[in-house]
Image (cartoon, rainbow, N blue to C red; front, top):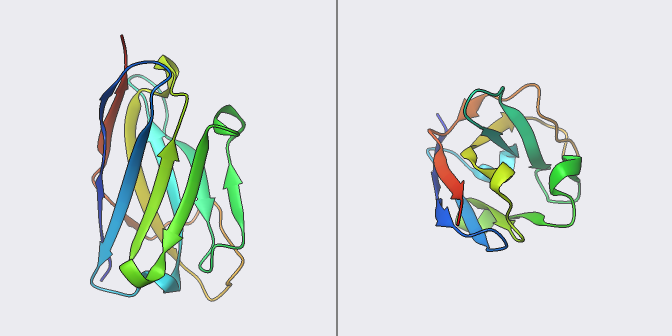
Length: 125
């Protein structure tokens, strides 16, 4: 069974950057599409970005386009979310999740099989 552990969250000033990591164990990450999600206080969880098994399909929610970059290193069993130009509205708990799929170019936010426990990102001056 796949286990996911997020890291890299913390407190950052507006305009700053953070890089989140999602480390997988228990299975080969290359067999999964990966999504990053976030949940702000009092709000529903939303999909932020996703990446297909080989990294050739990538999606972003409109609010982070041009600021966030998702990537993966299947050899290291790790997926990253580089977050630049952070805004206070990016404050949330960020989760990574995995979807087992045979489709190598597929990613979405709706059928995730495994979830990490999240890492808190706080953007504040």
